Image (cartoon, rainbow, N blue to C red; front, side, top):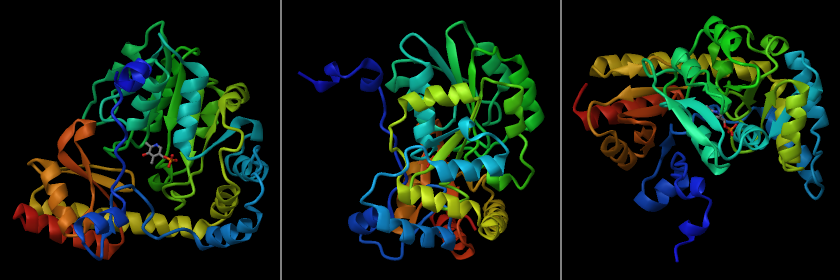
Length: 364
Ligand SMILES: *Cc1c(COP(=O)(O)O)cnc(C)c1O
């Protein structure tokens, strides 16, 4: 007997999510020292100091369960976004929230739409609940909203859109998304995954749409610009009824007290966020200039990473980079076998990556 026969069919057919290689694992397996990781779109500045202090305080309370309702964090988020706390659903990372949407609103026989080259978690949560993935073709590596609109059927329950998208960094203009929302039937939920929105350097624009589009769910995370990936905290903003339904499938204590405290502190640290944007902008310029010097094509990105075409088997280049102590992300599992995704690091990290890459490819 194979246990695969016992698993629900969506799960038996799933490819496990492949995370960025942890630094310790590379040191252990390859014996390489002085490793840099530019593989998981983490904040290269490390966590905000205020969050570290908040965690130290909260640590004294770790014998107790966290506030399952996330009162203080929801209050801070409601203030920031000018929404009611009832519109907020907290997640153990925004991945948790994405899964709650799927579990609360779709099941066997339902369809969930997302794009080619889109975030892997959409496919995982779809298959895990026995729903059918409907994958639309990408346009210039990004989302083709017309193709997505055409793919809507009577069985469609959810549409996942990441803006900017991971792993391509492509971005859709807000006006285009708004026009799209106007065309989508109200009974189809649209999840706008804005994990990288803080890097756009522009005014908030999607949150006010919640008033007009009750089927809209916006997801955000503390893992990227807020520098708290290891603590696992994210959230969604939606219609209160949608939030209430998601809350019914939520694990009661899904966000730890350490994570909640850190998130509140991080929200208050504007200077850290600005420094994050500055470092990202400078690093993006540095990498783009390096790619152009090497004659490599790249996908223009609005996020904290950039995906570059190495014009050869990217997995082999990835592996050679590992021997140089540089961890990046191969993206063949996203349908991009000749591309590598590189998270923007500190200037010296970006330089080490560029030097190693140009050595490996023999371009310079
Ligand atoms: C990184 C990322 C997330 C965030 O995941 P967390 O669970 O919040 O760490 C969500 N969506 C996309 C597209 C991402 O790239």
